[in-house]
Amino acid sequence: MRMVDLIQKKRDGHALSEAEINFIIEGYTQGTIPDYQLSALAMAIYFQGMNSKETSHLTMAMVKSGDTIDLSPIKGIKVDKHSTGGVGDKTSLIVAPLVATVGVPVAKMSGRGLGHTGGTIDKLESIDGFRTELSAEEFIRNVNEIKLALVGQSGNLAPADKKLYALRDVTATVNSIPLIASSIMSKKLASGADAIVLDVKTGSGAFMKDLEDARALAKAMVSIGKELKRQTIALITDMNQPLGYEVGNANEVREAIEVLRGEGEAGLTTLCLTIAAHMTVAGKIYPNFDSAYAELDKVLRSGQALETFKRFVEAQGGNPDQIDHPERLPQSTYHLELEAEEDGFISKIDAEAVGVAAMLLGAGRTTKDDTIDHAVGITLRKKVGDPVQKGEVLAVLHSNDEEPTGSLERLKRAISIGQEKVNKLPLIYDVIH
Ligand code: URA
Image (cartoon, rainbow, N blue to C red; front, side, top):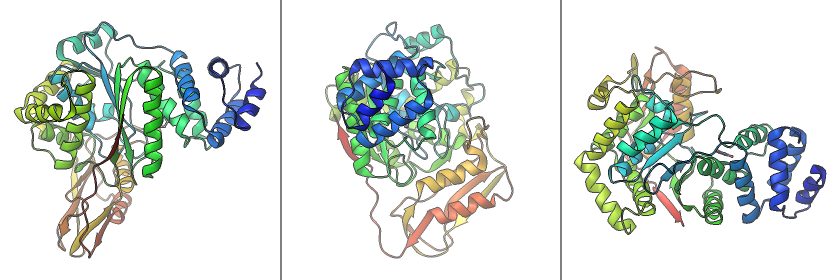
C-alpha cells in the first residue's frame, strides 16, 4: 500500500477500507508515515468527509494504537459521560457521585482544561490534597467500594489521536465532524466504558457554535457507538451562556456542592439530573428515563450524593472538611463587582467571553504548561432573560490581582442588557439515541 494512493483516493471522494485505515494509523503512530502526508489526508477528509463505517474503523484504529483500560474487575455496567466542553461546566462533579450513589460504577478518566473551558481534574485539584493519580489497584478498589474514582488521562491512551489532534490543530483541520467524532470516541472506548452518555454543547461558548453542526457531531458519535456495540446516547445542550452561576475552579466546586445539597441553580440541576437519568437507564438501574429522573431527584435532595462525593474526595486524599465547609476552599484576595449601567433585561451573556475573562484571571491555561490559580474566577448573578435594575450587581470577579483590567473589560462586554423582555434560553435541544 502506498500512502500517496490513499490520499488521492480520499481526495477524489472514495471511501477508505478498514485495512487502509489501519495501515495509515499504524504507520503514522510508528512514524513511517510523515506529518506532511497525514496533513494532506486530514485536509482531504475535511473536504470529502467519511461515511459511518470509515469513521468507526478510524476510531478503532486509534483505540488500538495504545493502551486500553480493562475495567472487567469492576462489577456492573460501567457508564461514562463526556462533555464536549463548555464554560462553567461542572456537571461531572455532580453527576458522577449521583449515579454512583444509586449503583452505577463510575471509573472515569478526565482531562485538564485548555483555553476558555476548564477541566474536571483542575477543578478537583482545588481541594487540598486531592490526588488525580491512583495506581490501577487503587482505582479499581475505589470503584468497587465507593462506586466512583476519577483520575487524569493516562499517557498512552489512543496515542494516534494525540498525534493527529496536534497535527489538525496546526493544519486547520480540527473542525471536521468524522475527525472530531472519532477523536472523542477513541478516548472513551480506550478507557473501557460499556456505555457512554455524551453532552454535546452548542452555542457561543461551545466548540460547535451551530445547532446543526452539534447535531451532526452527536449523530456521528452515536453511530460509532452503534457500530462498535457500545450503547451511546448524545444530548445536545445549550452553551450560549455559562452553565450555572460559577466559572473557575474552587468556585465551581462550591457550586457543585450546592447542587449536591439540593440547593443549586435550576438549569444546572435539571441538566445534571437529565444526564444522570440517561446514565442510570443505560446502567440498567432504572427501567426508563422518567422513573430514573424522579428517583435521582429524590436522591439528590436527600444529601446521599453529597455523602458519596465526600467519601470519594477523602478516598483520593482530599480534605473532606472543605466539602462540609466549602467556604474553606481557596478564596481570592479581591472581589470586584460589576454593576448594571441601565435597567432592562439580560439579553446575552457571551459564554466564551466569560470563559476568556476567567482564564485571564488565572483560572485557565493559554498553553498546556501554564499553572492554574484555583481561587480565582467569576460569579454571575444573572442569567439570560432576568430583569435587572441600574446599579444591581451582574457579576463578581474573584481576583488575586487588584486591578484585573483586561478581564473586567471582557466581562463588561460579555453581558448585554436590552430593553425588550427576553425569553429564557432552552437547556436541552435534542437527545440522539
Ligand atoms: N475534542 C477532542 O477530543 N477531539 C477533537 O477532535 C475535538 C475536541
